[in-house]
Image (cartoon, rainbow, N blue to C red):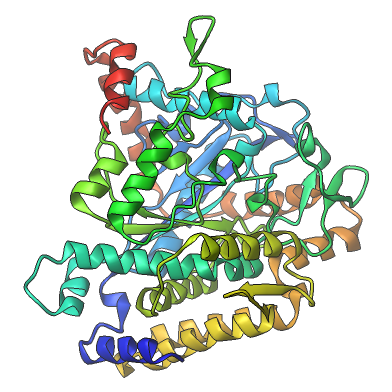
Length: 516
């Protein structure tokens, strides 16, 4: 353990800040496809789930069939997981489709079967749809049907004010600490891919017109023997256009500048696509990214925004409020795709990333991070895999042990009154250690083992898990009235929004683009 880490740990302990459960909030976003008879659903977003644009609990992502379930921020992990289970129960009980449990979609025979999400006739709804149309032209719709878990985490103002220990403006201090967290998180994000990756296989239909570097698993699927998370490979959430952005997260001004560059720098292949087709908009712009959220990263600095605001402007003016972890697969072995042990490990990892020392990132360090990431994505369970560290090599087990040791030291520094938190972290830590010792215990290893033992395809594997979930959630008896009310209210809210007099969409779009 480095002296800087020890010093930070001691300071937080002395300031009674080490028990982060007193100062933290978290929220979970779960993306999942609606599937019918092992095919992507062709139906509209169910009215029983409310309006996708205005429902705070249930919306859609890229496709009309790609649900996004959202918990409100909570003061405990248990409450967030309970809230997610309630939303899942309500959803299962109010649709005729199956909720696909895997991050990789079912076999989709034709991209034309993937309906882009529709959000109505308001300008804000049309903008969301246009963004998705642009994604389909840039990357293809198949890639956009992969799904996962987003984990949002924040620490409150009191935490940062006490840590800073002065009466100076604390937001720059908070921004620097969050960016420190992000750099450390990214440095070892390969470990999360190893531990929680659950996409080692894809249906052959997913590979249409794509770079196929996989091996055949059966007559329907392809895989890599030691892959962990193909969702995060170039088959999934990757973009050649973004490869040279090298956003470093060294300071907020630099991050804002890099992001603005990506939002305004024209990209020749996207210029070739054009902004309109048959006089209809098909992209928001022809820059490297259309909006801030198009930048693909394992973790993002975020701030809550109001409708119509640009995230880049709010971050610049008000600073970072929370981080969004974006590299977690849906775990098909878990009812809600994420469980308590995963969440406690993620939060302990976030806290050690926050307080550990971090160096500024240059291009060489970013290249190492990306190389470790891709090697773990494709070959993470290879016992002979070596990672890069400052130009040298290190084994997966040795590198993982360093992270585990910091989390252990952090847990042991927790005060006696936080004994439950300590025990939950240590329990999760032991589970994660066992996965490094035996890669067959990782979700990716377990998926391939079950598919091979039962001689089943990806579609059959996921459908089996989905049917188990249907049985479980259909029998779920806890009260979901608040979700029902929110869904009904969202339809009224959408009607009210669409009844407002607005400027024409071209003017709205121009103002939106000029707002940065």
